[in-house]
Length: 267
Ligand SMILES: [Zn+2]
Image (cartoon, rainbow, N blue to C red; front, side, top):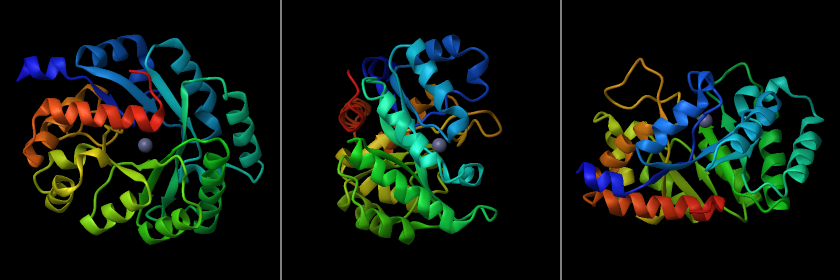
């Protein structure tokens, strides 16, 4: 089993690597992840506060890529000029192969203190930027599925995207896949109680799936209470192979190719 894992590199399509505890010693944290078989990572940003930090982090180490976006949690920290500023960031980054996505963006109606209209407005603007700059989108969504799908239908992301941290029904997953959106598979599936999500993900085409940790968030089963880490992606891939009845290597290779293709990552 371990030999198989070592031969099968995987990509973490969603890791907040600029956050603690990784920020204390990113060189060591990235070396540890690479040793575990993590080939590359995509680091989404949350807003103006970390666009620059994350771009710099990706320049420092090999195989780190980033997205630029406004996370719905942070909508209220931005004023209307942020869209022009974000557009300017993409223009500046146009020759930076590490800048691979718009995100993380989306809708979070579980947070009550962030105005819904504002969230809808920023998402609409970011979907437009993605199409203008030929980039895929990294989507975050909680308690706003139908609103999200409506916006995606109005302005389909022509370079596709990923719905990160998917949990939900088969019908929701297929709606996303029909819109050209990949399904981000994270730590949720490592919990046996997440039966609906596990059953959904077991039935979806393997070519629609990406692996992600969302580290330091979303701890995998067995590591509750600790910050999540990119190397735990191996646990997620192992469970994904198990619930689908496929070989680890098959899951690793397919998700790696899909992630590399979506984000134009060099393997
Ligand atoms: Zn995230």
